[in-house]
Length: 250
Image (cartoon, rainbow, N blue to C red):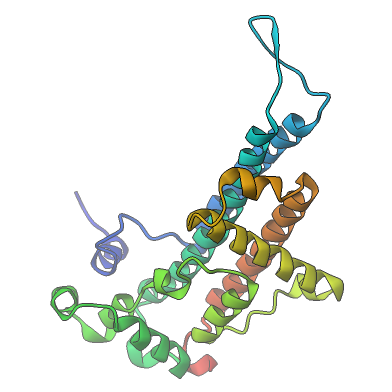
């Protein structure tokens, strides 16, 4: 089987992954995940309506409030998972673009170079020696470690911090058009993170967490998450198109 130069480059820089997603693939992935979440929320709203009746073998089945609370807690996990996976893919999109453009390390701006060096701290010398054949190209991909950037604590503030690490001043422009929106969205996504961590670390049970959230609140969290990530997708797409990681664009 013939392997293209691009495929070979991807394999060299990403031996631990079968593929690397482009920004277009990330947008497609994001759209599919949003559809999944929309479907989940559609049925959650139906089930939360007291007028909704479920029957089994011609007998009425009444949903326990605890079960609805568990469903709402799962909604929190779906939203946070969307945040974390989207941010991770967007960081990988930048490194993928650098690899495809075959940029040298010296081509990068100083901020991006610093980010690569910071990520290299967690790379073992034994593994790096095997992966590096052309230092100027491969060292960039070796410093590709998006998981290190968030550690389960993503909110708007943290996402902006990650952007600054790579020299991207994220503004979430659609959010800034209304003075109240940025604050509300910040608070909503912060609550998604906090409640997700409470569930993940066992500080709250799924029932306790779900009972503490109204369906209206959860829908606000959902809208804030989708809108903010859509804005982020647009900003990273522009950054990649303009090759903001290059020295000449510093």
